[in-house]
Amino acid sequence: MLRVAVATALTVPVVGLIIGESLARRLGPSRPALLIVGLLAGTIAISALSTLPIGARSSTTPAPIADREFLAIPIPAPTVRATEPVAWSLARSPSEPLEVTPAPEAPAVVRFRPRNGWVGVSRFAAVSVRFSRPMDHASTEEAFQVVVGDTPVTGTFRWAEGDTVLVLTPASALPYGAGIALSVDVGARAADGVALAEARSVTFTVQQRPAPTVRPAPTVRPAPTVRPAPTVRPAPPSSGWRWPLLGPITQRFGESLTQYGFHYGVDIDGKTGDPVRAARGGRVVVAGAYDQCGGLEVHIDHGDGLASWYRHLSRIDVAKGTLVEAGTVIGRVGDKGCSLGSHLHFAIRKGSTFVDPLGYLPPR
Image 1 (cartoon, helix red, strand yellow):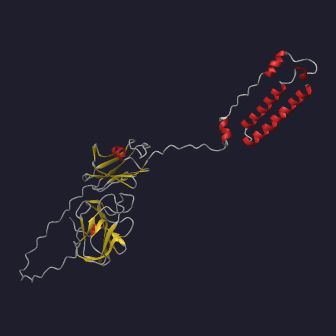
Image 2: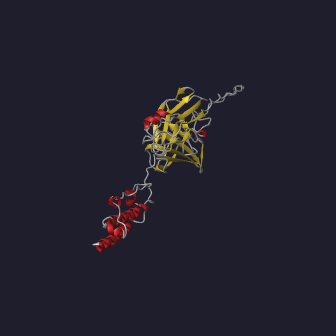
Image 3: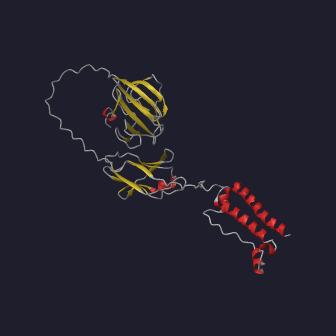
C-alpha cells in the first residue's frame, strides 16, 4: 500500500508538469501564462502528497493531526497584478498598439480678404474669410462681422470652394476713406460641430474720395475769320472704344482681393443674363472655354496688336471668325469659372501684355 501511494505521489506531479508544458507552448512565454503553469503543477503536487498515509510522510514520527488538516486544505493561487487583465494578455500580444480615435481638429481662420492693413481698397469690393475646414453656414455667417466704426455692413452671403470660403457682397458701396473691421468669433463651427479654435480680426481702409478735376479757364481768342462752310460729309462708322457693360467696378486692374493673385483686368458688376457688348469693332477669335478659370469667354482681335477679353459669361451669342462692330451683343453676364459672383471680367491685351482697360475706355 505504501509503495503504491509513493508511486502515485511521484507520478502525479510529473503528469502536472507535462500538462503545464503543453499549456505553456499554447499560451506563449508571457509572465502570467508561466505563473499559471507553475501554480497548476504545485497545486497538483501538494494534492497528491496529501493523499499519502501518515506513516509514509515520515519514517520516524507520525504527522500531527493539525498537519494532516493543513495538507488537506487547498492553497489558493496568489493574486496576479498586471498592467492589463490576464484575459487581454492571452488574447493578444502586449506589444500590439491600442486603437485610439483622435479628436476632430478644430477649424481655424486661414486668411481674410482684403488683408490686414490694406489701404485704397475699392468701395465696391467684396470681403471674405477662408477657413481650414468646411464650415456650418448658419453659425459662421452669424459669427462673421463687418463693421464701419460701430455700424454693421450688410449684404449678401455666398459660400465657395467646398464651404471653406465665406464671401459677403455689401448691399451698397463702402464709404470713401472708411476704416473697415472684419472679425470671426468662436461661435463659428465646422460642418461636424467643432468650434473655431480662436477668434480672428483684421482692418483695412477704403480708397479716398478722388480730388475734383480742375480745368483751366478757356483762353479768349479773337473771333476767327468767317469762311464758307465746308461740304458736309457723312461721318464714318465709329472705331473708338465703349463700355461692354454699365455697372460698378468691383475690382480694378492690379488689385489682389482674392486668392488668384494679380488682377489683369477690371470686374464690372452685373446680373446673370445682362447683355455684354463688344467694346470695339473686330474679329472674334475665341468663343467658348479657353482656360480653367475663365468659364465661357469671348476674345475679339481689333488689329494693331490689340485684343479684348470677356470672361465668366453664362451664354455666348457670336461664333469664332465673326466680324462684329462696337456695341454688338456678344454674350450674357454669368458666374462661370473662378468667380465669386455674377460679373464681367473685361481685359485688354496689347501684344503679349495685359494693360489697364481704363486707359482705353471712355470716362463715364
